[in-house]
Amino acid sequence: MQKYGSFMKSIIQLIIQTMAFVFVFSFLFSLLNYLFDWHLGLKGQEVPGDPRAATLFLGIGLVCAAISYFWGRKTPAASQSSGRSA
Image 1 (spheres, rainbow, N blue to C red):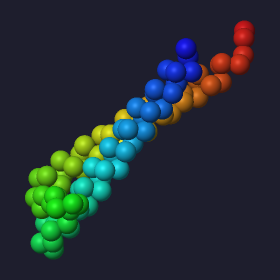
Image 2: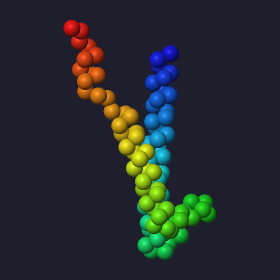
Image 3: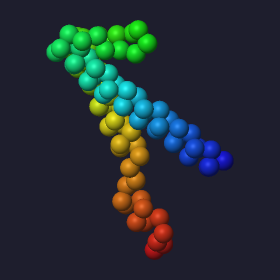
């Protein structure tokens, strides 16, 4: 049963990492649309060229990246004390 919990944690972490990548990528597209008046997008859908939308995309991307980074870390105290008994 423990194996499935670890598997689900990995899947959720992968989804959050993907969200972080997509939002930071959208931030870059939105910034380019704003600065150069390009119409970048995928399949006919344009990314908004608005600086407020760009900062929102960047903020969401950074929050998702931070959640993924800190969730995936292992604490040094837990890894040191796991194999020793007093």
